[in-house]
Length: 246
Image 1 (tube, helix red, strand yellow):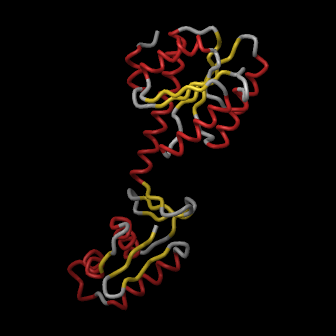
Image 2 (cartoon, one colour; image 1 turned 90 degrees about the vertical axis):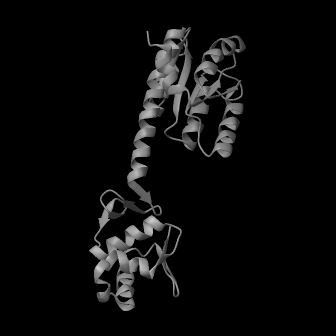
Image 3 (cartoon, rainbow, N blue to C red; image 1 turned 45 degrees about the vertical axis):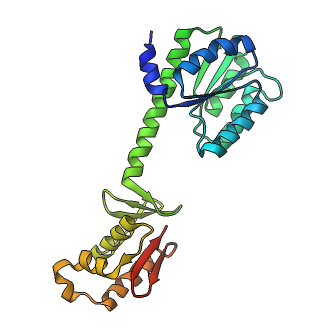
């Protein structure tokens, strides 16, 4: 049996939407969810659940981590709810509760990509095992996303900057930059919304050889870089410096 502490370690900061029309089952199962998750919301039918799902996203700018839904419900069943949620978030972790008398639905649910099944009647150990597997996958995906975000900076829908490799990519293809263009991009990324001053650029590009630098040379570097990234804007603030808007 999976230990409660191991499950709680994964779920304690996660949110869950529980959709079930059987009030007696809600009381029993929700007690488990309340002890494991930081946020637990309940709906009695699919239509209300979809409304809560959208409302949660609007208020928190993110979706529930896990959705647990029964199949047979009034107003909107679990299959339709699952399809609607996947239109909003194709990566949503969904656990479907199914009775033994509903095997005809399972193939369809598997084909549209649900996470796990809870077959009625289920027990405490079964719930813990499924929540452990689902939450473990969610945490791994979150860690991977965080790792990528520390390495890459999204400039727009087409361009990204790889901080580790100092590479500019368009649609995952590397754009060839000169040494000076690369240094300039690094400065723009580091300063983000701030203006990168001409003095700062001269220091970083030419260092002790600033006698080789000139405004015209810098303008030439900026001009070449603009041609390589036409969908991005390098703003020139007269007398101060430049800024890459993203």
